[in-house]
Image (cartoon, rainbow, N blue to C red):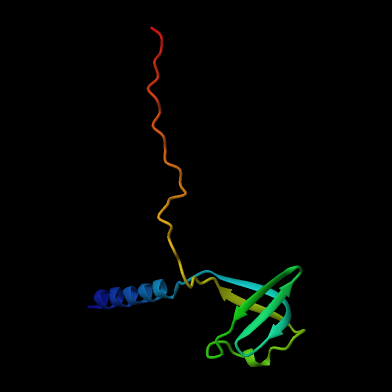
Length: 102
């Protein structure tokens, strides 16, 4: 009875961990160059990145002001993927039969 219970708890814990693992997260710290309620532009050196903000899930996004130093944690998310049907991986050529002199 105890072993069944422990196996069930372990199984649930592992499945929760697997579902929680999502896309890799990244961080950038820079100066805000533009901000609205739905987007923020951050500049770090010569690199300028624009992020869409979801106010429902991003706390404090209404308090972002131009000139502020911020750290943005984000994930890369594809909005559309199109396939050309072509493969960029070169096909392996079959080695020619070598003939050695006898």
